[in-house]
Length: 417
Image 1 (tube, rainbow, N blue to C red):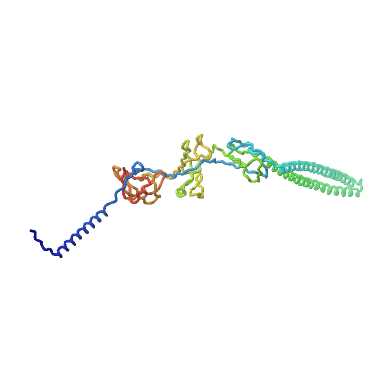
Image 2: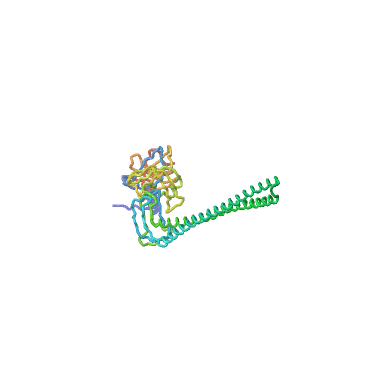
């Protein structure tokens, strides 16, 4: 027979409270332990990631951009006068020489003005010859008159000398000698006047002839201008090259200054490379450059840097050191690399998918067997096309992931499979 043992209610309550406190402490300890555990590292396909090894040595700094080949010499041929396009002789793509005619223009008024200028020139030349002949004749007549007076003066001097001798010998009259002296003096004055007239006639003739010659030169210049304008209606290439563009049509009226054709020399090409404005601040003229023309790689030098920025890029012209391959032609797309400096004995690694020069970024560094990668703070230095200087955070031989790892930005490590 079982005998019931009396239980103390107070003891039972204490026991329950102790069990509840123990359970609460146990749950708290488990929660704290779980909170201290690191989150499980995500698994990533290692074959989809690009990695590189940190190296020490020389790193060539360079900037890269895309662009096109353009002719070094481009000639736009403008219209010199108002005209109408009557004929297109050559079309784009044609090989031209300096005297090759590209277009035929027409301007009846210019043809009439040229003919009028020609007739005015001929009239001015005839007038010039007439004045020149007339002045020559007048000068000769004046010189003849001066010579006649001079002859009379010489005769009067001789007569006066004879009269003076006769008076000395008391044969002639003194009044006769005086009269001959007056006549000689008058003729001397007349001779001087006629000589002055001759000199004045020569100067006058020179002035009139010079005026007529100036008029002839003026008419000739006008005629040459009209003639050159008329000749310009035959639009010529002006250089050896290829006709690239004819932006007019037959029957179209053109005004002075309108571009009629574009000619370029396809053998003399340069590369216009677009460099990001953030990378162009260190570029200078003469820097060595390499251009990939898709048919080969050619070397050259920076010949011009555009001072303005367009669409976030700076245009840099690269002139080539030698001839280009046969496949090179205007407007061909190319890739250009411009060398800035050769950095000696530095730590460097491949350029990551993110980050800017002189900044600190987080890169995943692989462990020795490559099964896991841990986020590491890395201070980057100067950038190049495919490499970047490592200032802090990595050592020679370390392997880091260069691919975009923003998808795992909340994790400190990843597992590679």
